[in-house]
Length: 555
Image 1 (cartoon, one colour):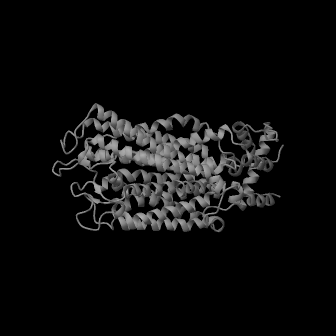
Image 2: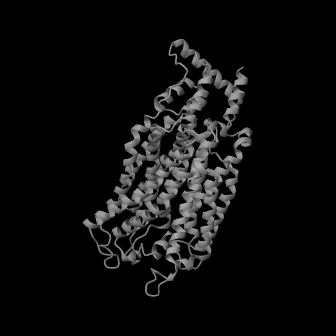
Image 3: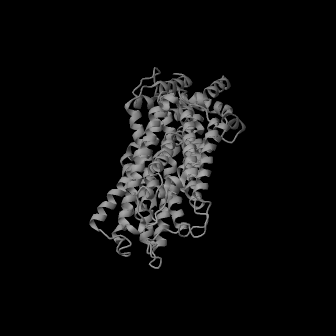
């Protein structure tokens, strides 16, 4: 009968030194499709927000295209973020309590069902349609939230030490393709419906500019989000529990060895004895190990956790919060940039479907030149130059470009043209869009990737998913502040110059200055987070030391 501790240590060492194999890439695709769906669902709403306003909130008395009232816009866009935050906390805890495998399929199933349900949001008036849409998007966000801690934890526990950062980063990088795909599907749908139901611009015919059939565009867009998740659901529920959870939390080292032999095609030198006596002895040893571990293992809310990991958790939560405040605030000056470079004309000069097409095209272009490259540059370099340097450099560059935008915003953008105030004349439009693109390139080749990766490496297996969920939830709290707090804050300080329905704010320049300060805070809190490159998870979490102490207790 092999010693259980020896089997467990052999499994962990084998995982750390395992060569990159087909199962690693299969795991990236299975976990990554969840993040593909996450990004598709969270970001595709911005391509059809104006369409929803035209369809459900058009008022002939105003003489301009309908727009979502501020409270409705905040609800439609923000309810998914609130659901995501709560899902990160709940599924983060559940992943440690019940095991990663047992709850991993639930998150994807929830995303599939709520993506379809969002497209089927029904009602007899605008209020009922928006209410049902918000209800389903909340639960969509709840499922999306669960994918953050579970996917990161599973990928970190499957990976070898040498390429762990690239593997976790590749899962997260699927977000870039999700954002690009959401914009692409919106382009295809709007172009197809515009060809079939072509309508004049709003200023030519206010009523006919929005065909009733346009209502199908946003519904189909949301429902298509279920497809990639559905294609990988079977493979996700067939994934075995991670060996680290089985060995370090459940203390079933023999099962951990069996699982890894199947998926990584390795053969451990220990022999499995399946006789009833051997199984009984294994259970006895596992119970003894759990009792010994209980005496030396600390809990999340303990002085020992604070001593060992308090500064680390503070660093991961604050950095993620500050990053998402800036990352989700991009809509503050996106409108000015797209208008300045001529990508999006004034709303009255387009029909409803033309507006969806041009907004989606602009977002697809930004994703192609900024978002997607940033993610994959991180994947290529993270195990060479390390997480810490990438995050520090990313925050520094984001601060730098935000400060340039702050102090030279109107010079870069230009002034409203005398003949057409919906356009901007003068300015330096190429430099303007370059500043915008570089800011978010260094977000993705920087803290947007590393804040996801590092929390999955620092903490003990029994708390790893929970701590990642706490860090991610802090980020989503920052996203809510960035997406909605600054949407109000960025409104003009001067009465009458705000977007319809919004109160006075602090202005775009002051808002950008605050965002630059947020990035600077993230830069300094990066010093609370250690470098994790080239170290085993047990070395980083201190579980090697715990194992030694537990052995002494058993003896």
